[in-house]
Length: 200
Image (tube, rainbow, N blue to C red; front, side, top):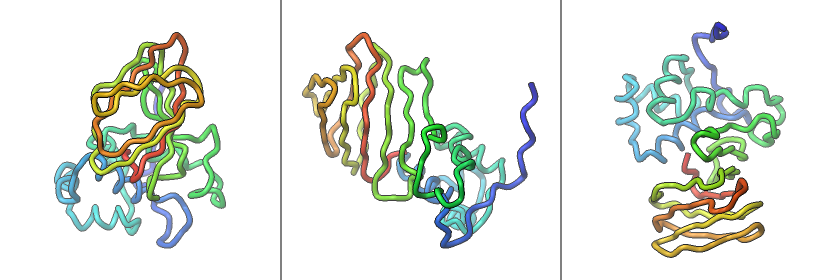
C-alpha cells in the first residue's frame, strides 16, 4: 500500500502563537541527547543559524530535515506530526487520549506516551506501559529530577544500587542517580512519570 504524499515543508506556528511548537520539541530532544546546536546542525547537514531559527519556531522545516532529525534524535518521524489533528484552540494546552505521541512497541517491552502537549515546558508527563518481565538497562539522565506513580501492576526500581519493590499507588522520586527498572509481575505495569526538565 503506497504512503500518502507529504508536503515539501512542515510549517511552524507563527511566532507568539499558542500552537504546539516543533522548535521546542527539537530543542528538548537535542538537549536530552547531550548534543549542542552545532553538533546537531552538522549531523543533519544544515547551518547552525538555520537550526537555531527552527528551534525558535522562526523557519519552516522540510520533510527531509524532519526525517534526518528523527533519525539523529532517535524518535519516529510521526513524533513531530502526531498532534496535527488537535483543534487550534486546544494546541499547547490539551492532549486527547487518541492524540498522544508514542514511543516503543510491544516487542520493545515498553510503550511510552507523552501526556504533555509538547516538550517546551519545565517538565514532561509520560505514561509508561511495561510488559511482564521487561527490564531496562541502567539509565542516568544528567541534571534531571524524576518522580513517578505506579498506576497499576508491580514495578521494581533500582536507584543508585538500591532496589525498591513497588505496587499500585506507590510513588518515588530521585535526582541524578543511575536508575533501572523491572516489571516482575504477570501483568502489564502502568507508571506515570514526571521529569524536569524534559528528557525526550
